Amino acid sequence: ERTALLEEEDAICKHPIIELVPRYEEIKTLKETCNELKINPKFAEFAKQGLFPDRKGIESKIYEHQYEAMQEAIVNRKNIIATTGTGSGKTECFLLPLLYDILDEKLRKPKPKAAIRGIILYPLNALAEDQMRRLRRSLSSDDAIDWLNQNTENQRITFGRYTGTTPFSGNKNTTNFNREKDSLKRDWKSALHQAEQTKNDDYLYDRSE
Image 1 (tube, rainbow, N blue to C red):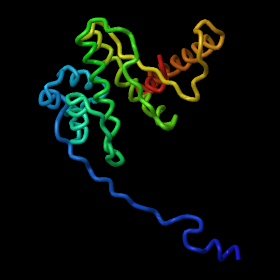
Image 2: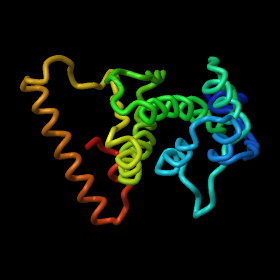
Image 3: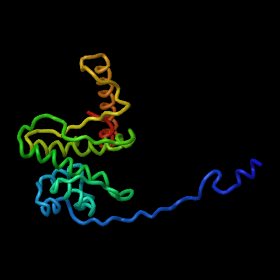
Image 4: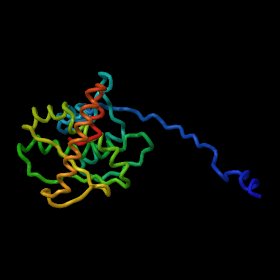
């Protein structure tokens, strides 16, 4: 009886489902997008430093739905919903407009008031962790910091993460805070060592400085 049950179709697993992912059409560079939408062209310069780098010396282009997201969010100041498929760059649909607004304010105001400018909500910790490397490369790489130093009077675009695994909250002058800070420093030194040994800077984006 057990054998008959196990031999029934779909009892243990189903046949593989093969999905063909279409290649989305790249339509414009960020520089062309900024010029066409009449928004600050310096954003395209900044994005090249880590957020949206060139590929092997060739200027990267955005997809049509990413262009539409920038147009609606930045120019028309509308809310957007991106429903495109896997691997279609949905992250850029919200990250490009968000970071554009933050950078544009820094370029227009020498010393804008310190405040939270945006909140990104993820349904899973794993998704938040996955994006940390992207944000570090975009905002904390040497190239990004050098560009900000030259164009925004040494201002920074900072970010933080708060999840269920965040160690604690409260006063900075506590034993827990100092212990966690020391742990992060050790992790950062280890990442630096690994990057130097392997000549691979990717290790630096797995840890916070």
